[in-house]
Amino acid sequence: MKLAVFVRRTALGVALSGAAAFGFAPSAVAAPSDVTLTPSVVGNTVTISIANGSDRPVACTIAGFNEGSDPLVDEAAFGYATPNDPLELVPMGSQKAVQMRLEGVDENGFPGPVGSTEIPDGDYEIYYGCRTLVLEGVEEPEYWGTNPPLDDETTTFAEVIRVSVPGGDTPPPACSGSLCGLTLTDLLPAT
Image (tube, rainbow, N blue to C red):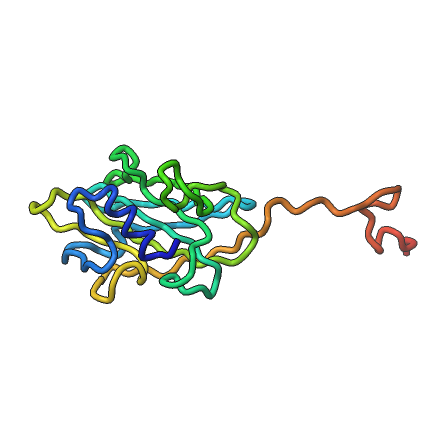
């Protein structure tokens, strides 16, 4: 799925205001450090920790692309989207760790990050958009993320997140016999 579609579909699903995260400017009170994302990679599992320091719950859409890809043209390799469940939002003043999933098709036939959590080896660039949930006509939502998916008028841009997925645990070296584990120094006579 391409990033623009990826963000629109999931933002519309959880947003009470009905406005999509793509192409809208944030309100003036959003500070770039209010919502931050931090990656961790263990083997072939990529986890993103979302820290919400804003004064409202947030929903996020995250998409990982092969390094050098164009996120507006190319398909995402993996991602995460806040489900259509208010209990899945990141509460204000809290942190939530989410696992990235390969792109797939959900039970309703919609493409999205619903596949395996085993991400293939490679270097990836992660783009994201997060927004507060607000009541329509009462408040303006605030936005955080990268460009794309946020537009040029957004002042809360973050840098693209880069991760390398190493391929899991390194297999032990092939070794057998009584010399296994010895170095050249161990084999030389003592002086």
